[in-house]
Length: 165
Image 1 (tube, helix red, strand yellow):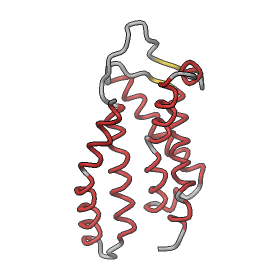
Image 2 (cartoon, one colour):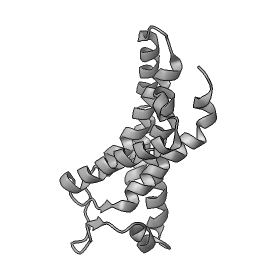
Image 3 (cartoon, helix red, strand yellow):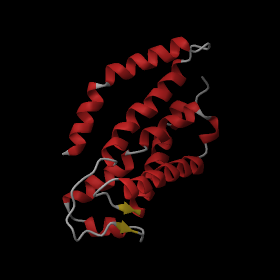
Image 4 (cartoon, one colour):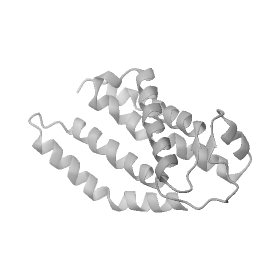
C-alpha cells in the first residue's frame, strides 16, 4: 500500500508543480513553457517513486538481499500478486524521465541514450538502496526494468518531443 501514499502525495503536490512550471516559464528569457513543463515534470513525476524505493521496509530474516542473475527475481515472483507490482512499478520509476528528458536535452533523443540514462540512474538508486536503506534488495531485474521504463517513456512520447518548439 506504500504506492497509494505516493499517489496521494503526488496529487496533493500538483498545485505546487503547476506553480513551479508557471514561475520557471516566466523567469526564462525565452518564456519557454515546453522546457519548464519538461523540467518540472521530470522531477515531479520521478521524485515520489524514488522516495518510495529509498524508504526502509521490513523483510523476513531469511531474505536474499542481492539478486545478480537477470530475470531470476521476476521468475520467482511470477504467478503472485507481487509480480505485477514489481514489474509495473519498476517500469514506471524512470518513465517520466525518459518521456521528458529529450525535450530538455537534445543529446537524449537517441533510444540507446535513454536506455543508458535509465540504466545509470537505476544503478545509482539500487546501490544507494543496498548501502543505506534497511530492508531493500539489490536486483539486476530492477535495473533492467527501470532502464526499459525510461526507454518506453521516450518511445511513447516521441511524437510530442520530436516536434520543433
